[in-house]
Length: 111
Figure 1 (tube, one colour):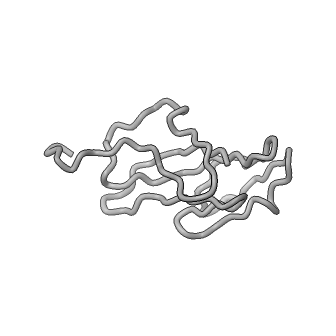
Figure 2: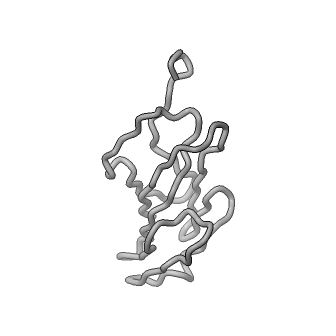
């Protein structure tokens, strides 16, 4: 699965978004979406407006799901994050997906 993460700063104490993948199923903060039945090869899925983490069209190109997902960054992330979109592009397989945010050091008195 090819994910483009769109990070946003969470409110103080807000839990960071968790992602996990199994085949064509993506879990975002618990609930899952099975893209296997929603997006055929070469096809697109346009999520309805509403309360979900997806931005724009979800597609399957050469068998690979491609989606942009909004992720909340936790309190342990640095205030300045990379602005290069390539930093937030992830190709992930089964299992937990790490959010590539820059973390602050617990020893940093300014963090």
